[in-house]
Figure 1 (cartoon, rainbow, N blue to C red):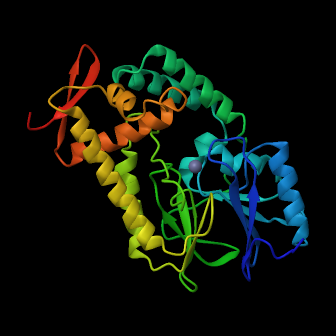
Figure 2: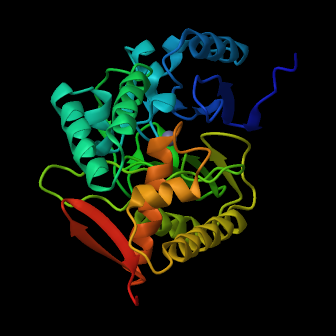
Length: 325
Ligand SMILES: [Zn+2]
């Protein structure tokens, strides 16, 4: 086997690891800088660990050589294997922390927050229970680690000379991208993926704050990618992206089109978000209730922001309607 398989440039090596999730395999990147750095770590499964150690061995390194791991965001397919690196520094945005340490009180708060939010938006209890079970199963593939170093917009990372942190919330509240201005490359996690549109996922707000509007955040964060000149974007899933600007423009247009589709679906009626989910994703909503719901709420947030739709609450249920009807 060609040991250069996956070699992307002189100092970035891509490993593709299996995941048990619908999204398919995940990419992690070994960056040979002053410190041997891994970007993301894969899900906590034996298969992913075996695959990782085999691919790492081909590069001449072993897991103990990895001095630090930057996490692009907190999702289990990117952080689960952190537990296997007890001696590496873990680096990421502060919004990873509550997920990474698996604080029970936080997880209970998230579950309660969504239970109420879903009820208000018309989801039947049966689907709410299913989403709760799925979240708990999903967390089994995550890690239990603390961040050693917290990074924010504009930071440089020790041992990773030339790379800057860019905050790109939307897909996750913890999502960052690493950008290297000298060769115009970016390691973007799930901020941009070639073959599929990255979901802007709902997350519970910090206690006492308003709910984040992930699609609005995501669109702003995509704009950051338009403002940067990139030669190549290394994503968390799928192939490297050479024409990032073109793809970002396509994604922004797709979102506008979907928002208008939802606007049309409203017709002259008032509908709950769940009614729209059922109409828009008749085949998918049972299996992917959380994803389809995030998609619809995100686009309703966008329509609301543009003053195209209005919300009203009746008997604790939220209804949307066109602003001009
Ligand atoms: Zn993700």
